[in-house]
Image (cartoon, rainbow, N blue to C red; front, side, top):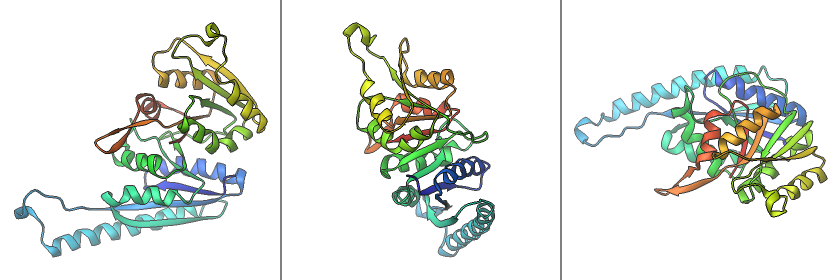
Length: 278
């Protein structure tokens, strides 16, 4: 059961969307909401010491950033105080090089982290690295919301099922949402042709598993799509879903994990929240 919700806050209009979903989930679970605001301090980087600011200038830059962060934190506190349930604000002043690890560390002691889908919107460059860090390094489910719009009840949920550790973890993280929905659709993208030709029914086991936990699960095979991400987004539209649950797949590049094509497609274009786990 979800009892501790961590919400990313940055002072943008997207805070209202994230907090709206957080309050909705908290009300159903009698959960505590923690708003996490990391004030990014300026970092001095240069290739030549001739252009390096002196110590007093660096100190002044840092103090100005800290003061501005304190002002914003006070406004965020006021915003949180308008929530109905228990809540708190956690405020940290960090450089961006520290913020990624800090975000993941903070999320490890929450049941769910709520952020904004990190690509293809106005603030994407500012937050994509932070959201990726939480997804890959926190070990927690990450609910990534659209950048705008009003929160809706999670009455119809689509599970993008693909056998593997990532999706199995997403199922575990999403169980409260499956059992609380009016309908859960297990969507399988048939990338290797129709399973009926091979006299098999992929996905039947996970549908039974969800049903045994009390979810109203239905199985859908989705054929005729070359792009699995587009196929799942189409399934969300067709089912009238208000939540997509999926595993977050990635690969290693230059010692960093990079999201796979289908995952990135969904996190660039989904107009409903995506609960994702890696």
